Picture 1 (tube, rainbow, N blue to C red):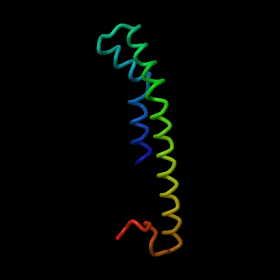
Picture 2 (spheres, rainbow, N blue to C red):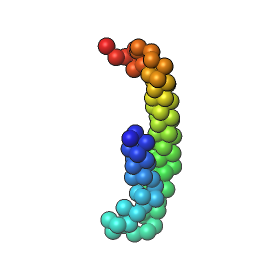
Picture 3 (cartoon, rainbow, N blue to C red):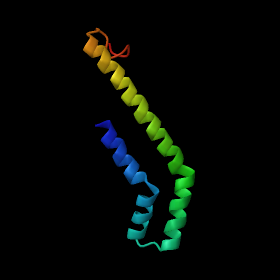
Length: 82
């Protein structure tokens, strides 16, 4: 579920998707290209790296919790649960 959510976010924030939406809104090709390139360089690369790391950390934690659950340990949800 989290992977499909992150894939959806990555798709909508993709510079090519942004470019197409700008073109659909009526901007000319040159301006749309400049905006999407600037967006890719300044925002998307950092944001995409953050999303990939977040997804990796989340799935790693879920896998560890699942292994603990399968082993029958009591506190498989972690120490954050009351």
